[in-house]
Image 1 (cartoon, rainbow, N blue to C red):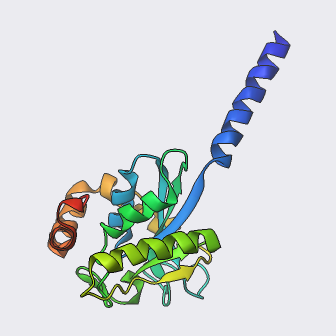
Image 2: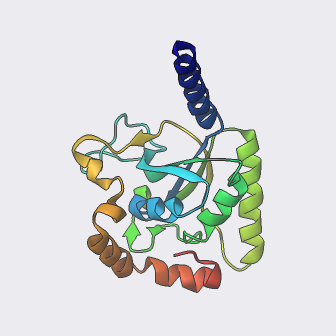
Length: 197
C-alpha cells in the first residue's frame, strides 16, 4: 500500500516535471496587452499568457507609474509539440499592424509599439524568416516591427493585477474598447480572412 502511494506520487511528480520541461515561452509586443492576451489564449497549444512589460531599463515598471522605455507585451507559454514558434509568429502577424511606427491602432506611443523579442539565435532566424515573408507579401509597405533581444519580462502584479485576464473578467468593457479602438477593422483591412479576431 505504501509503495503504491509512493509510486503514484513519484509518477505525478514526473508528469508535472515533464509537462513543464516541454513548455517553451515567447515574448511578443503588439499594442494593448489585453488584446494580445485574448488573441493568443485562443490558440491551440498555448497554455498561458501573461501581460506585462519588457524592453526597457526601469526595474519593476508599473502601468499607472513609470514604464518609460518598456513595451506592453505578453509572455506566452506554449507546448511545442502542439504549436511551433513559427506558428506563434504567423498568428502574431495577423493580429498586429506591422506598418504602424507610432503604436498600434488607437494606442499611440512607444509602449504600444510592436516587437518580437527573441531569446536565442534560433528564434532570431525564425523571426527574421517570418518577417521576410510579411515583407514579401506587402512589397509596397515598410514592416516596422523590430526583432529585439529578449530582456527581463515584468508581469503586471499587485494592485494592477486586474490587467491579467481583463478580457475575461470585464468582457463588456474589453469588447467596447477593442471595437472603439478600431483594432479588428484595421486587421481586416490588412489581413482580410487571415485576421483571427
